[in-house]
Image 1 (cartoon, rainbow, N blue to C red):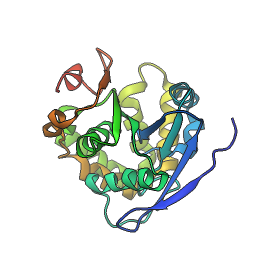
Image 2: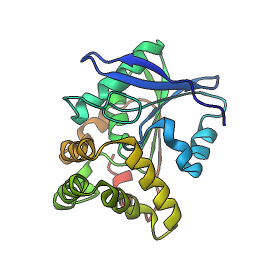
Image 3: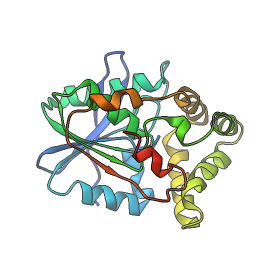
Image 4: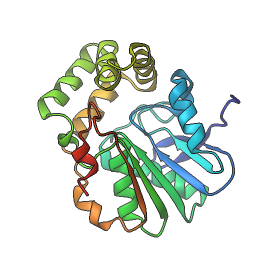
Amino acid sequence: MAEREVRYCTTEDGVRIAYCVEGEGPPLVVSPIFITSFSLVHLVPKFEHMLSRVGEGRQLVQYDMRGTGLSQREVGDLNYGATLRDMEAVVRTLGLKRFSLLGMGIGGPRAIEYAACHPRQVDKLILAETFARVLDTLSREILQGFAQLARANWEVASRTIADLALRRQDEQESLRWADLYQKSISAENMARFIENSIDLDVSFRLTRVKCPTLVLHYMDHPVYPFSCAAAG
């Protein structure tokens, strides 16, 4: 696959954000699935192939969230709300007036928030294997434990997080995701991101999403219960 052209923009609070644009057609912005970098998705070929299929016939826009990947790693504000500024900066830099928005995993709440707050920009919303409230997926104690483990041993923590959803299905795939996590973010930033996301809840925003929305969810997802998909 051809090497992606990396571009940069700056958020309103001065954070440098890396992004890339591929293909031609109606724009589709991808909210980062977790803490992963678009420059490293080749480490998980199945995921790279999925994104390639999703982007067929579209202008696919991907970016690295602050504190991750090719974006500015050392940042003071890693609160979830601050990460909305990253998407806003990319959209503003590209001059996108109307676009579709894809949110998967932890990127789902960010996509919901953005669609609710920018109804004139978001034409369609796709939510895949995601949720509106973090504590509907894992308990506060488990999440705090992940943050502590990340600081103590990021390699073990990344494998544990990847194992949650994948090990029973494919141990090698789980290891690929763990490698992607480790290379996308530092241990300290991972711990901070988890801690700042524990109380994340955008369920009150759901009624403000006015654009056509497609929700995709496994009946027996190992991390996100099906009830998360029916929350709206």
